Image (cartoon, rainbow, N blue to C red; front, side, top):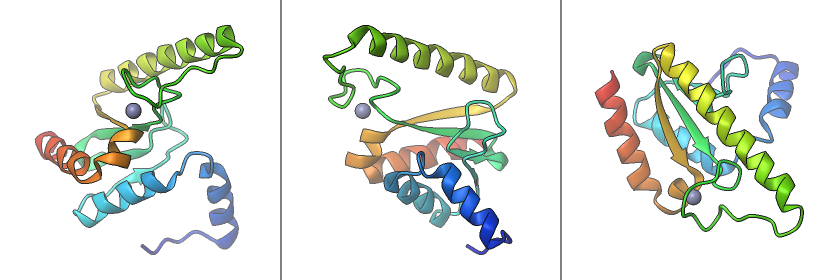
Length: 139
Ligand SMILES: [Zn+2]
């Protein structure tokens, strides 16, 4: 996809998103694009810094890492055995923040789709199809 960013802007963008943009996320986004969905990615200005924004569908997609966002009953949502107080606190804060941010977005009229990293890792096609079905409801 062509864009009008200068080399410098692009470099800056790359730096900003490097920590977030995992290859599985990119693969998922590209699949959505190929299915005809147009989106904005990694908008830092927006509440919650969503991974994918689909303005036409008034929908925001968060691709949540299972570890940080504590995917329930997921083998990737491990708790480090050292510093467990620190981690518990960190996880609680993340959960609290997620909840507040999602509520704010809902209040502003956005639909929210949460996708877990393990879902796209292990059930890519199903997750994609489910997401597309949801989006069709939201248009
Ligand atoms: Zn998971």
